[in-house]
Length: 217
Image (cartoon, rainbow, N blue to C red; front, side):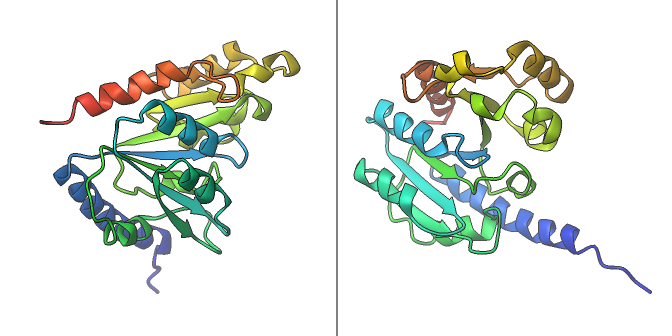
């Protein structure tokens, strides 16, 4: 009897399309961020703050949700181009979904922000063709999330700690968080931000600008 590893086959197929996506982004000199987190951590708020600060840049947002377009409408009000992807029964975006959006793009962007479906497990398994994986962890979620969901933190290029304005109402322990991160991903440095109070946003924006400045031409 031959056994078929379905998950491996799915991921292999996804990787092929992700490579095509990445080649498209590279050809168009576009930086792409895959933004991941649990529901309610503030992905959309971070994106809106980013748009506000990078008003001189051409930005596209790809919004991933199981259902609805509430966040996409918020982004659209900012005047930013946005595509909504509803995954219905799927708990993550995949490369094929992103490729469908690519087929509809009519102009070049400096930066594409992909807001993945709120989930700390599934999204990290699927390469979308992005340049960087950004993980958002909010203070109310607690400092122990990397212990419970290690893989997403192992693969992240940057960690945003959002809602630091709530620290006085939380037992969030940065020392314990950093101890965990050193074991999982020693290169992952957390950036503390608050979208509500506009704290730490400049550090995040400067990080983005640095990555865009590395683009050829």
